[in-house]
Length: 256
Image (cartoon, rainbow, N blue to C red; front, side, top):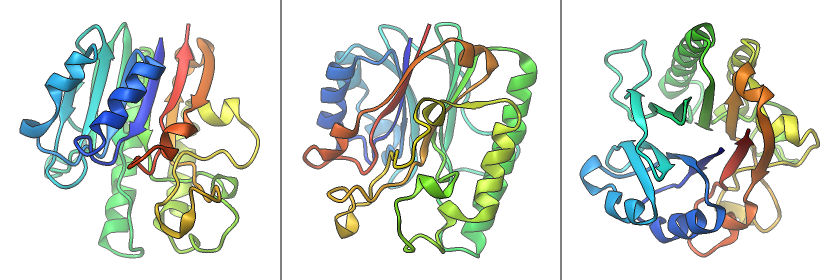
């Protein structure tokens, strides 16, 4: 099974990019983030035409998450992240596909920090960690995939001082991600690529794509059962270089 995560950064604007990549890469499951569309405007028919069933939680202008599954329909187990009934931001969806529980998540950016957006980011990650601990305890195979909006270590940011004040790299953000890993999750990309300079996001500004000024923000975390089944990991960097591309590249794992 090939499971991918892709922050599409507006699914309707990048629809042809998405369809081209689906045809080339043929993932079995895709977790999308930043749909930036309402449920009514989600391109379900086009995605079904490419051979994928889809479940999604949209939100006009911002946010939005989806899970696509090739030749089948994902079975939704959660439409949102527990822990705050008042949170209406579309940032989490969870579904069963092929005997695996898969979450597509889009964590808050948190900028500017300090401030209420950063407070929300940390509170959201605390809720994620609590829910993830419950998934570990349940003993089912799980993949937590998405844009975590955390660059976990200094080597996950290109050599620059321009991000020093950014919420993505603050000690509190990184500590939250570390606490998640300490539950027993495997960071598949870092496991496969221990070297520096492995990125999944390149900002549109300051020619960061052209000079490889990237960050590693998109992660696939595997529980112990899935980690044992890990067969391959990849980042489809070329997708970021296509016309009118998302500022993220698809990231994937293959499990046996």
